[in-house]
Length: 318
Image (cartoon, rainbow, N blue to C red; front, side, top):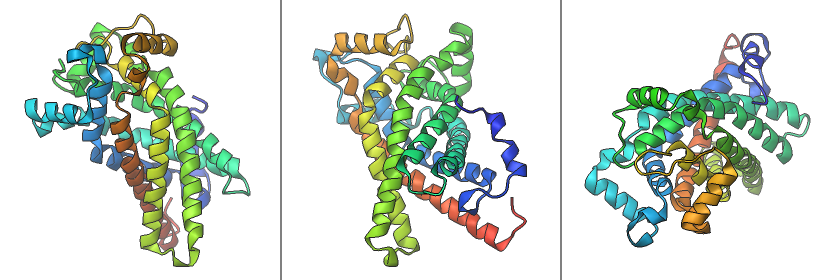
C-alpha cells in the first residue's frame, strides 16, 4: 500500500470539508453504497466470467472454448438461477468496505494532485492507482472466497466454511495468493478507468453545458462510467485470468501452481491453452464492467449530491 489507513482516519474528525464540499467520511459512505449496488446488480455476470476463466480449455470436451451461452446454459440447467448468485454473501461483505476505501482515497488524492487544475487526467489516474493499492488489501480475501464459491460443484458450504477450510488446509497466505496480480491488474485498470471517466464526463458536459440538468447529468455519469469500465476491462483481461487461476487453484479441477509468479502462471496458461487462454471470459468481463461502472459512478455521484444538499441545509453535518 502506498498509503495506510491510519494516514486517513484522522481526516474524519479534524479536517475541513474536502473538495466538492464533502467530508472524508461522506466520500467513504458514497463509495460504499456505490460499490455494493454495483456488485450486487452485476453478480450473475461475474459468476459466468469466473466459470469461464477458472477451467482451461483443455479441460473441456474436444478442447472447445467454453462460451458465454454454454456457461449460462450449464448453470441454469444444473443449478438453477440460484447458481448464478452463489458466493454473493462474500462479495457483500467485501464490496462495501473496499469501495469506501477506494473512493475516499481517490477523492483525497485527486484534490491533492490536481491542485488548481481539476481536469488533470494524469492526476486522476495517479489518484486512482493509489486508491487501488488501498482497496485491494480489503477486497482480495473476500474475492478469493467469492470465486471459490462460484465454481461448479464448489466443495464449500458457504462463506464461513470456505474461510475456515482455507485457513486450516492452506494457511492465511492463500487469501492473498493473488494480491500481487490483483494490484498489477487493477493499477492500470484503475488508471485507465478514472482517466477515461473524467475525460468522457468532461467531454459530454461540454457538448451542451446549458442543457445539462439533473436528469442529463445522471446520463452523463452513466455513459462515461460505462465507456471507462468497458475499455479498462478489455485491456486487463489477461491479468484477470491469472488472478482467477491463482484464487481457485487446486479446487474443482483447477490447476495448482508452485508459485504465485505472474510470469509463471501466464507461461503455464499459454502452454496449455495458447494465447487465447489469456482472453477467456473477456466478453462477460466487459459485459460486467460497462454497466457495473455506469451503475457505480451514477450511484456514487447521486450519493455525493445528496450529501452536498445535506451539508448545504445543515452546516453541522460532518
